[in-house]
Length: 189
Image 1: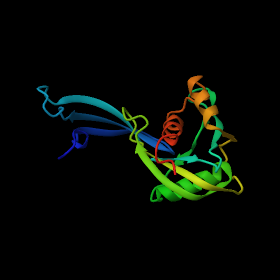
Image 2: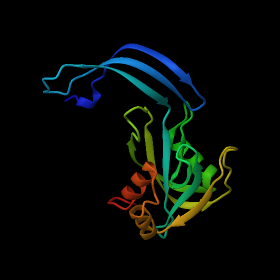
Image 3: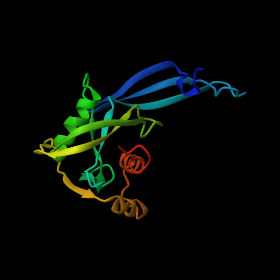
Image 4: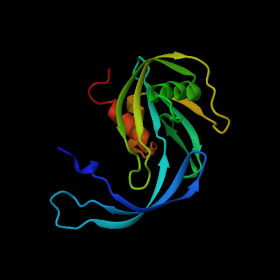
């Protein structure tokens, strides 16, 4: 059975309106499929899409259960945020290799075990980016080497500290919320 989310729109017109280093923006005129069983006809709309190669997110968990986060300034929101390790997947790069690379670059740690937990779309209304979440365990200290445009602080937090941070609105990054909340559920091995 074909899921409704797999039905595709018919693109009538498409043009790239911006090309950047990390993403590009295109504007499409589309006819989107109607929901199965709906009496409503197809919808014709103009959609602006941010095209992104995808990213990895890493939930680094120490043997005592503490989770390692990074803190950095995010200009788009004008504040410092505590976040899980994350970064873009380079064209042609294996996502698992990207997760190992990002973990070591941002924190200096290497993972003995890296388990894929899930894929998700953080902003599907207008961004094509798919994030792949990994759980990293058997962590070994190495040497961090952040990119030239990154200034990072790292700190390990207990589960209770993270839960308090969520309740107080101190963890505000969607990928971090997904990872931390999923990381406390079943199948944490």
